[in-house]
Amino acid sequence: MNKTAFIFPGQGAQYLGMGMDFYQSFPEAKEVIELAGRAAGLDLVKLISEEEEKLNVTEYTQIAMLAVETAIWKVLDGKGMQADVTAGLSLGEYGALAVSGVMTLEDLFKVIRKRGIYMQEAYPVGGAMTAVLGAEASLVEAVCEETEGIVSIANYNCPGQIVITGEEKAVKEAAGKLAEQGVKRCIPLKVSGPFHSELLKEAGKKLRMELNQAEVSAPQIPYLSNVNADYVTEKDGIRDLLEQQVASPVRFWQSIEKMIADGVDCFVEIGPGKTLNGFIRKISKDVQVYNVDKVADLEKVMEVFSC
Image (cartoon, rainbow, N blue to C red; front, top):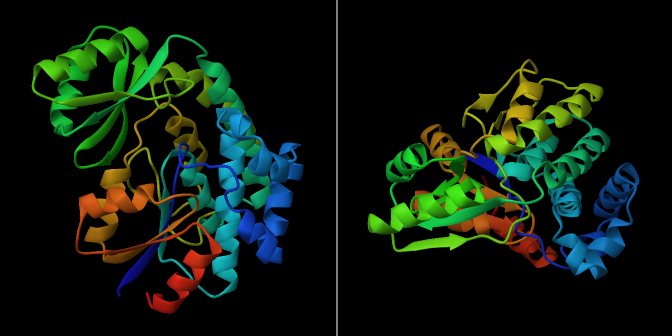
């Protein structure tokens, strides 16, 4: 294998009890999750283990997800499993920031806690997101541009899966136009806001104030920004990109293609679920994909990990 990428999932992959087998089995995972709880002022173990309804609320989902992702990564790191490059989807990009060493874990947890709150509060009513399946990205882009109101692409996930976001009326109208042009499946998503649309620019501005309080270092391992699907190798501009990310399309598909073009042929998804594994398999069938969600997954990956 040439190069390995660690990748981190975003909101929507969470589930009750995620990461708790790592918490109970590895002191380093327990330490990370407890650090996240202290930084956020939350009992994260109780939240993750018992409070499913709360876990699915954005302001709590984001800190819980990042805590679990970084806890699992710490276990991998302790076993000598290293990445050549890293990336994540939306809040998963903060897992990549941890791997890259851009900020301390404590600062990352403080920032992501505020990010979740600001995104939750930014546009409480009247927003929507819809998954568009089986359509060319160019068609979705064109329809969004010609639709009145605010509607744009939120996520380029993989071939055949695009997510649109914006004002509820505009999103519905765009979905209707896509259906008229032969797109068979447009699925409204159960979300609490029009994430990654220009309606969240104010949340990005508030987040920037939090980012300004955190010390930022040059990445020790390159990571790819969701905003431009390009490598970040210097500390200059990191805060700008993270501010923009809140209201910009997530270019996950393009990021994976770039990594593959640069020799990455092994992807390890770290965190709840296998969503990113599914996306990558649709992007390329010529790479190996693994996921580490549970302790049993770790054992399997360690048996084959020679990237």
